[in-house]
Image (tube, rainbow, N blue to C red; front, side, top):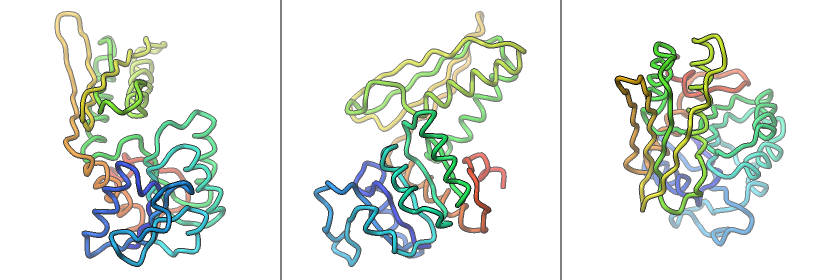
Length: 247
């Protein structure tokens, strides 16, 4: 499988490059970075592939593209690709509602699997928390996160996703709008990622915790999603990790 990586110099992108190069069944087709990156023109791991901007690499043949960049760069990439039916895995977060609509509009041309968190096992964690919310809608839900100290002190895409879906699940179960779950943000040292959902039942409490030990977890999950996306030809459209688990 030939893979192009957008955001190849980022925290997750770097791990993706390492995993692709270390796997004999995978081939790095392109390592895409921002035009101003100091890595532009430098060979990746001393090989024949150089880091370069997306607009300079669109002729590279690849079976799938994996994007862990920034919203503006991700949307610009969609414009560069145009109507090409290249399967894409999108791990970029922070899209506004309008930007997310633009991303979805590009799905008419190609299959795209989009997720706020690709870490192995996160999807099962998310589904378990939502199932509890549906079964116990009277339990007040709160969401908390811990990430490394360098991350912005605002809720991550993962926490916003959990809060929104918990609100929707409880609201449907109760038949009226439930309170919006509060999100607590913590930043500590080099913490990779801890996500927790708590349910207050008054006389009891339930909690679901998901802890990521290394950044490789996100990269491994993205590669697994890419494999699912291309193992069987998928029609153009927007997919989620839940789709890959239900296949």
